[in-house]
Structure formats: structure tokens, C-alpha cells
Amino acid sequence: MTAVFTAADLPAFFLHFLTLSLLSIGGAMSTTPEMHRYLVAEQRWLDDGAFTTAIAIAQAAPGPNVLFVPVLGFQVAGLAGATAALVGILLPSTLLSLGASRWGSSRRDTPLVRAFTAGLAPVTVGLTFSSGWVLALPFVGEPAHRVGGIALIVATVIVMLRTRLAPIWLIAVGAAVGGLGWV
Amino acid sequence: MTPDIPDDRPRPRSPLDLFIAFTVLALQGFGGVLAVAQRELVERRGWLTREEFVDAYSVAQLLPGPNVVNLSLMLGDRFFGWRGAAAAIGGMLAAPLLIVLALAASYNRLADEPVVAGALRGMGAVAAGLMLAMAIRMLGTLRRNVMGPALCALLGVATLIAVAVLRLPLAAVVIGFGLAGWAIARWCIARREREA
Image 1 (cartoon, one colour):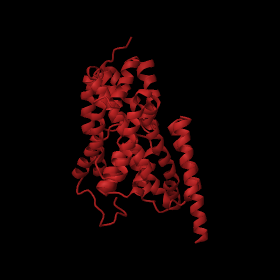
Image 2 (cartoon, rainbow over the protein chains, first blue to last red):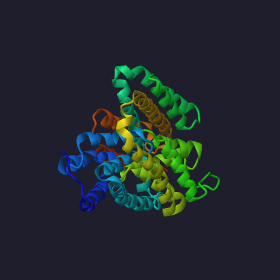
Image 3 (cartoon, rainbow over the protein chains, first blue to last red):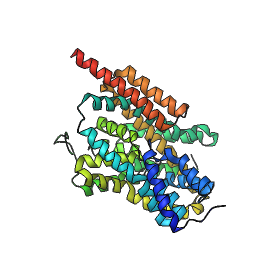
């Protein structure tokens, strides 16, 4: 049973996303458990299915993953909800990041700032491999899609490393091959 | 805010140019924008070197907020100050937001179509390949790292295991290994300066 969202709920809803913004270290996805707790378990504006659907939609569409947040807002309260959720999740973190990056780049030649970027670089590379692995996992784990999926992943890696082709063409090929049922 | 960009390097002509570039790359970003951003900004347009991209992204993911939004903000700010930051974030979000809301309104009908489900699966596999190719390209940036290849490999592999195998929370991994890397790199810089 879901609860009805009224215009009077909007300020608290906005405030909640403002707070989540400052907690979203590592990306908006890292606040998913807290959003689920607030929207589904506590306020009951959404059910589990609607919550999962919002994330699936954002992953199917082009653009940053953070767009699952306005989709959640849209499901709760239409365009007003989408706007409040998106502005809320972005505003505090964006202002903080702008200040922090300006502070850092004005001191980029000091040993502390140089050590910061040098020390983080291998962690960033490790995280990028992890993301690739997590995205590839559904294909490795599922026998029905294993051969086609891995073939498409390997072909993509080879084309990316050997050519200067724009990624959109590879995505179009992926959609076509997948739509034909080969993946 | 354009401290050390060499004059002969290609760069955006205006905030509008930035807005268009970020819109183009965001619209190609199925299953994550990062790999496309690296492809478009570094390899195709040449606005940044690979090292600069890795540096900016390292900082972007340690700050709160969506990583690619922070990255857009930092790159836009570097070329045109706050107007550039706004143009880059606007380009990254505006067109995809319209698409995602349109999808949200029609999702339940589309998802039951086997052709649509298959196409999404194919796009997912390509997204995985794009991410892995970017990771392989990033390896090259570590060659000149002050910590040397062995320490870089140790930190990178430890991060991979912590996130992909042990599934530890991302924030804890980034903060924990980030601080460790920072301390190690600080020590390596100090040692190199003593030797020089």
C-alpha cells in the first residue's frame, strides 16, 4: 500500500535530497539504500517495483546514472518531484566540489596536492576495472547470454583500442545485434 | 582558471561549444558516461591529456556528488570559470533528462517487448566493453607515477579486489585506499626530493 504525496510534502522531500547530496561520496548510486529506506520503507510513496524500475530506466537511457534520482522524483510527484529530487541531489555537492577543485588547482604544484593525485591514480584505475567487471558480470554469469555477450564485450574492447570510432556506433551495433536475439 | 593549458592545445571556443560537446557525449553514454567522456574529450577532441583526465576523475570521485557531474564541473570551470562549469553540467544533464522522463512515462509497455529487452542487453555488453577498454588505456597513465610500477599495481589490484570481489562500500574503499595512496605518494615525493 503506497501513501499519497501532497504539495505539503515537497519541502521535506527536497530537504532530504539536499542532505543525501552531501553523503553521496562515490556517486549518487551509493545513496540508493538510504533513498530506498526513505521513499519505500518510511514514507511509502513508492513500492519496491517502482523503485527498481526507476534504476532500470536510468540505466537503459543515455546519460549519467544520477538520472535515476529525477525518475524516482517523477514517480513520487510528477515534474515537481523530478525537479526537486534532481536539484536537491546536485546543488550542495556541486557547490562543494567547485570550491574544493578550485582550492586544489591553485595549489597543484605543492607536494601535498601532487601526492593526492598521484596516490589516487592507481585507485581510480582499479575502480575502472571493477566497474567494467561489474557491468560484464551478468553476461559471464548467465549461460544463455554468455557466448554472445562475451564476444560483443571483447569486440568492443578491440575496436576501442585499435580505432578512433565514436562509441555511439558500437552501441548501435550492440542494440542491433541484441535486438536480433544474438546476445 | 586556465593556469597551465599550453596555447597549441585544442580547446573549446565558447561555453556553447562546451555545452554541445557534453550533450554529444552524454547522449552516447549508455550504461555510464565516463568511458565516452574519456574517448571524446581526450582521444577525439584533445582538450585534455590522459593524465589530466585521470587526475580530474580521481578528485571528482572523492568529492560528494555524481562523479561525472563533478568531472563536468571541473573541466568546464578549467576553461571558462563558473560559466563553463554550468555549460558542461547543463550539457551533461539536459537532453538525457528529457529522454529518461519520456522513458519513465512509457517504460511498462516497452520492457515486455523481447526485441527491446534484447537490444538493451546488447547495449549493456558494449557498455562493459567500453569501460574495460578505458581501464586498459588508463594503465598507461601510471607509467610516470611517482610511486613506481610495483606500488601502483599493489594499490590498483587491492582496489579491484575490494570493490569487485569483496563488494566493500565504495565510499570506504575510495577514502581508505585514497588516503593510503596519498601517504605513500607523499613519502615517495619526499624521498625523490632528498635524492635530487
